[in-house]
Amino acid sequence: MKVKSRIYNGTLYLLLCGELDEHSSSYTREEMDKAFGSGIFKQIIIDLSELDFMDSTGIGVLIGRYKKMKDRKIPIYICNPSSHAEKIFKMTGLYDLMPKII
Amino acid sequence: MKQDNFMEVEFKADSANESFARVCVASFCLPLNPSLEEISDIKTAVSEAVTNAIVHAYPKGDGVVRMRVQLDKNEVTITISDDGIGIKDFKKAREPFYTTKPDEERSGMGFSVMETFMDDVQLYKNGDKGLRVVMRKICNSATLKEGTYAERR
Image (cartoon, rainbow over all chains, first blue to last red; front, side, top):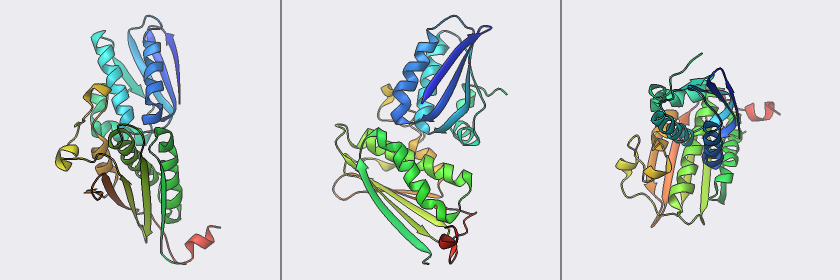
């Protein structure tokens, strides 16, 4: 699992690569939180184009990050989910918290 | 060539083995010629059940998880069991967003995901202690026929 980040034009872009499960959840959580403290941005876009697998543990990680950014009034958006991730997001209602953008 | 097959495997209840468990079951199901979506569904359900066993069944982290996978025509039955602390209230455990560890950023959607991605999910007490999760999925695109397994090689 890898988390790549960059800030551009006031947006924090996070690229999640690999498999997000219980085993990789602590690392993913830490890396995302590090990126949250890495600079100034007004919104966050999480790119899942290189995420090969995710289960409900990933939902817990994402909701936890949402709660942190909600306090700072910074919205989070999801882009490029696989059909598999999309299925989990729809059933758990994650898109209500983190809308999908193209 | 018989139209049924099974395998059993056990491993340490360690999150490092989650990926192995997913890939192991998915590989064994390949003779059914499942679609990519069906394989993703199976891998996710296995991951949920194995994670439950690792995170919830053994608080001290010193247990064993067992998996049995049975193929029968176009149907796969996956049994994942442990000898851990078990679940007192099955009905409560299956409720969406219910978690016994709300302070750990857990979604509480494990059983809901299993139920969504598989055709049937049953929970049983595993003898005096532990849990046995039995999940069944019919692979509609499956084409396990006489000789299919041999022809693939």
